[in-house]
Image (tube, rainbow, N blue to C red; front, side):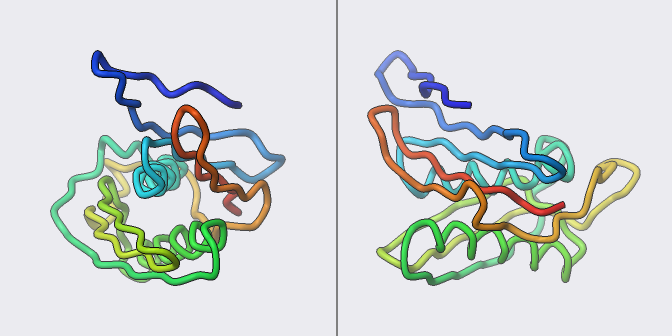
Length: 150
């Protein structure tokens, strides 16, 4: 599913996330005007596999740092770091700030402990995979995608 990024009145692209179907798993896509913004949106798509990100209160802050040899592997490392933090801390995240410097990603994830009644978690994510893995820039901005194992 490829869509042009929407643009505001100044021609700036609007970041967003999407899912795409993949057998029993789920594809996550982050779109943004920068690579960091696309990674932030991919993280929101990850959250949206579990719960509605709009239902997540951003009261707790978790710092995340990842390194990888290239952008694609960095995306997998980033999403898997979030899966790890969600599992170990019993949290969901609803807001992300990402900075990428060459092969290093530094981020802040904001969220809260899972409230089963309010979040109604749909599935547990096992991890991000290399399936359909792609990080690329195009005329409409950056796209960061992969399939997550549920």
